[in-house]
Length: 380
Picture 1 (spheres, helix red, strand yellow):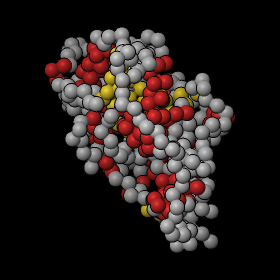
Picture 2: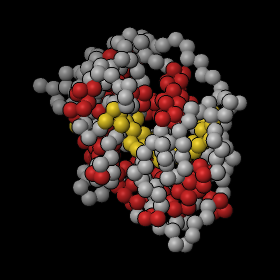
Picture 3: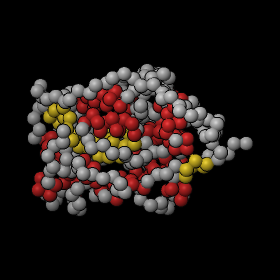
Picture 4: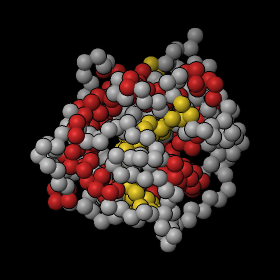
């Protein structure tokens, strides 16, 4: 269920003397939030519309470049981010004890080697055969594949998009959450290294924001020790275990099961974190499930892209949400044809990447990164 649209210029008011330096500190921690956010255990989530273009029911992502449009913010005045921050602060300040508002910047990781393989073999052959293997002898994608050069370039473009908006006072995340899979953590690191990480921010690895659980080797995570060694600047949620407790080689969770998982992840985050501006770096499958869990208009977030979502959470005893029926877990589909002999890699896979979220290739970026062509080793 979506809230009624809001009128940006009318609802926002900020004195002419306001400036980014006069806004609350970004370094708030759980318990006391300068934006008047609170922690609670929600029983209802709704999306606040009238703020971002992507939250509107008629949003069309085709050809839309969020990084060139203030992340989709509807109000385009020079003081747009200051007004937005003041508006969110006011919503929280005047909310009752059962209500809080949070702004989630939900990011999708950049392209990984598994994306290249799926694009080359095609989704049917990928789902029934290749995704169950760790690689094809030339390209490795499991477990836990890394970013490709294009994926790293996509993360750098997101970083540059944030830097461009920082000049106008965009509210930065107060906390950075990450999926435990390397492609998400690496995307987070590239995006925020010289914006927040160098200031001492420690991203938090959360188990529930991982990609679809089961079957696909690319979605099997590494041990906690290995993740900590690869990303020493990250920390872990208290319940994070040494070994992957969920991945299964026989069964895979379905879309309804993922949506239930996302509601549980949100419940946990809202219950323990009072902060208002939150970044989450995750995956296509769980972002789609997140949309389903909160009633957000669903669309495909491009690799390396992100979407801002304003959520109203209510814990009042009478507040409820429609139940999501989980159903049985899925299994690998049956291959209708032998995917191997006719599909062995012969040298190059071309991955089309729409420029929806990204500006044209600039200094230090190669043309191949823009068109999405990833050269693979030629078998000998």
